[in-house]
Amino acid sequence: MVHPLREWIETTFENLGAPGIFALAFFDSSLLSLPEVNDIVLFVKCSGAGWLAALYASAATLGSASGCSLLYVIGRRSGEALVRRLAPQRFVAVKRVVARYGVYSVLIPSVLPPPLPFKIFVLSAGVFGLPYRSFILVILLGRSLRYFSEAAAAVFIGQPALAFFEAHPYTIAGAAIAILATGIAAQYGIRVALRRRGVIEE
Image (tube, rainbow, N blue to C red):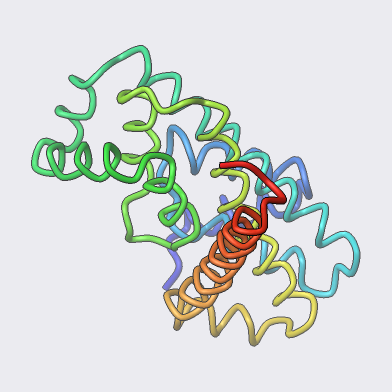
């Protein structure tokens, strides 16, 4: 049974179109916690929407990136004390992951669905001083991969895609990550090959 408040949120923001999707993604990625609501609204809105699905996916991506930017700024100004307060048991592990993998520590969570923690890594990116330019590019990449994949599924498959997403969210996320990893590996391989041939410098 769907909670009345969640149903009201989904209906209200869905009726607002692209601005509603932007606002929902912004709040979900910053100050509120609305697990899967943004994804469901995007699915429903894109189903049968044709080319407008790209507009809705863009709105979700930019809204989420804006919300993440707000968390980044909060983390940058608040320092380690904020992360210690919000996630005392995870602080050491999160700090270690961010220190080792940099902006890539944000990339994977930005693609995967809940309940994988995401906001704590966004906050930590600001806390531990990851460059904002690299941070926002990674957020845009991860969110674009997630939301445009969902939009495409909604357009070409329709409501069955929504049912599949709700039942198997990690299958979809895993496929998206596999595609992303393949692209990164291919880019790295091309750069190595070009260096060996002297086309580009180290």
